[in-house]
Amino acid sequence: MSTPVERQGLLFLCVANSARSQMAEGLARAMAPAGVDVYSAGSAPSYVHPMARRVMEELGMDISSHRSKSVDEIDRNRVGTVVTLCAEEVCPVFVGDVRRLYWPLEDPAASIGSDEERMAVFRRVRDEIRSRLESYFRGEEAPPSASSR
Image 1 (cartoon, helix red, strand yellow):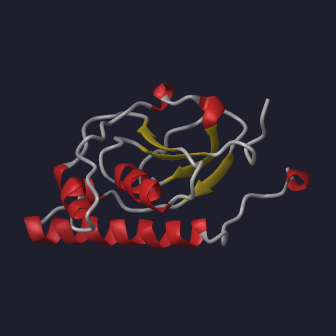
Image 2 (tube, helix red, strand yellow):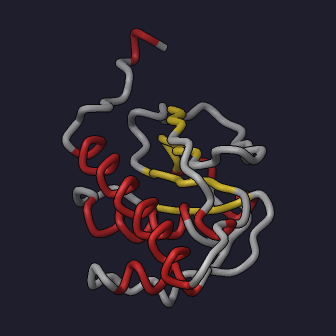
């Protein structure tokens, strides 16, 4: 069996798999080095939020083919790193020997206000995910060595 460091799958988890994890999946697919598989899922999947699609389109990224998925649909043997994006809500659990990162980000789908105010929240969360992914793919959050496990 391969270790998490050997497996190249990167999974983003949140509750509904509608906004944060969908944006993270889209961004990571565009930014990841060759050979890295990218997934997203949730504990209570619903739908891909239209505002998530819109803010990704602003960056020239089309996530319209994405669908909300249950964490149970993900092949655990392909995932080496799980990034949990929940902040206030109870995060889904991914069972298995994986590297775990916790990026607590507010749920933009729960934001209130005018459409423009809500879009601003989606943009802020999207940009924070992009910034964290840039650091991650530069190796600033490198996986632990096998000896530290």
